[in-house]
Image (tube, rainbow, N blue to C red):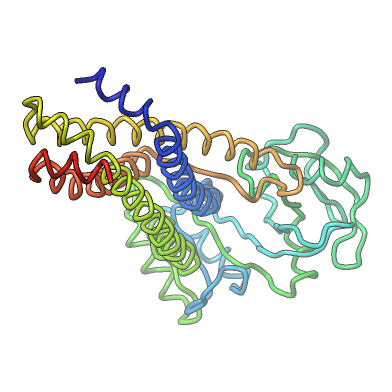
Length: 360
């Protein structure tokens, strides 16, 4: 049976190649769209979860970039039972030197330690540290201009998170002057012996203008993540469905063109089940080879994208096992569905009719 699979595929090389190519392209597209969107979400989530168990933002705000929190709240929270540390962050974006846009982070001094310096020192007033990626893009500058003000580069850091390694970090006071806010968010680190819900209730009781959540809850419900994820899923589903419907149609046409071959097999005593098994086997082989090719191609493309200097590390891919398994199962289902319907039809027709149709 296995020998027949490969002989049949070899006899129809061109159409086999078209089916293989279509499967590879369709699956690569879904992998790229899904992994890049999840990579972006993953990087931002990692950045938030690295320090805080609880995140405090302005209430009813759609994006943390627009959030404005009074810094005096940090001192109040620090005195709550169960709170170990409170970090203040300003999140923004601005041109840096010749770059049209880059991430800017203003952080309280107690958060500097989260940035792993590869050289230099943490920034004082009028200084900045650059992420590895943006430093390479700017060709290791001694000074940078942010919002029409020049800052001395005091150090270089590498955190392994694209959003941070592609940005610049200032002390909170300097960033406050640029973005006209005291803090975008507060990250609260708590003692493991305390319940997060108790501390969150105390924080939310301070003002109706703020909202505190666990970082996990915030990430799961963050509007921007939902928009990215929903858009990615819709685009992926439409592209994938259209691609696989095309694949199913191509498989169906190929099977119909082989009716005379199936008629001869029926005439020499092969059963309808044998013919259907042969077609399913061929489709399974092509789909598996196409899937493996798409997976390897996607990994290679994601690696290349992650190392394109122009992207500064902001675009990164995260290909999960869950995605790989789901795409494989669905692509196999669609391909087999496209093969089974015409295969069933061909296997039930009288062999003489099949041979005659094939000869036309």
